[in-house]
Image (cartoon, rainbow, N blue to C red):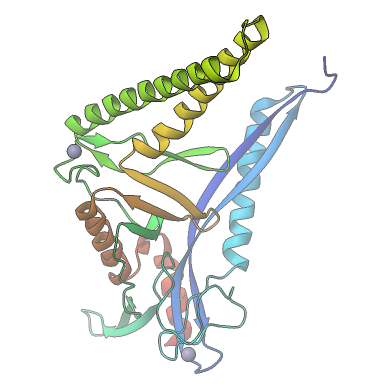
Length: 303
Ligand SMILES: [Zn+2]
Ligand SMILES: [Zn+2]
């Protein structure tokens, strides 16, 4: 028995900050909403003060998030001249005014008089939207609320599909909707796939029995047959249901920025998601409630 034991805690915090950029090439100002997820870890040694450790992990996550939102930048090109600033990570081709898939669009301050006649303004999307076609769509998860339609058949959804993805140790839900009949169709498909997996494993075990073991069949040869059947059965049941059953495929491309790639079997639903992403990218700031204070502050500098 180990003399040292502990319980470790991981907390995830996510947040958004409006970033202001003064272009080093053309001198123009622009903005973008930067989203980040950060994790904090803490351990309760000998399980002493476990709630304190949970609090510490949450505090560490929030501190890391605040630092990240303050220090880091996203690769967002200047909407006027297309220049990607030298301090930005170089993950988009420079010289293009289009943001890379998943990156937020650049925003500009549009001056307009307030109803009382005084000067005012608002932030508006400056870059052309990044059109996405096909059944794979790349987007920043918090920027998009997925359609209410069923992701399998495209009819009205009845509830959320259980679609967990992990940010570190924290499970999150994608927010994919599914209708009742597709939900039961998917679970029977899962059952059939599991059954086929076991049948394949038993067939493989039978092949080992017939061709790979010598007469007379001794105890260890039977053990080999059983081991092959069990191991391949378990592997088939882990791999096959994940590949064949879900109506979507999910790949987290950038966990810190929450950029993911989703693939859909239903091409018309994929088109719906692409349209939702395009609408989010062309509709101005998404997190105006959280960033309006910052927007007003930053706008004073420009005007
Ligand atoms: Zn510029
Ligand atoms: Zn459906």
